[in-house]
Length: 164
Image: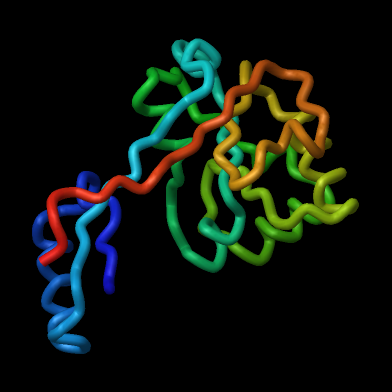
């Protein structure tokens, strides 16, 4: 079974390329099309605000993604700006940016050890933003203090149609 996810945000050409690659490698695979719609706890924390997007770190670093669900939410709900965290990063967060130069204006949450969470909390505290968009697998507010207004973004897998 192969799932082609996020078909609502990929080009038809890209989806067709993936389908061709699947057939070339495993012609008998069942292919399931899917989307991952986002859900935002409190959109008012985003609308008209300068937001800091905290994304899943490994998705940005090892996965080389240039955006995540926090970015999608910021755009969808009318943030005036996604604030660049780089002038404010400290410690382990700085080390992540030094190693992965192409992260851009997103703040990666890289692990949940004591030093990593302390440096993430300090970076968020120092960041010049109106609010924080939390788009990580866990709700960061459970493990660090975020004094600024914040909202969480989640998503769920939804199958589209029937498997081929």
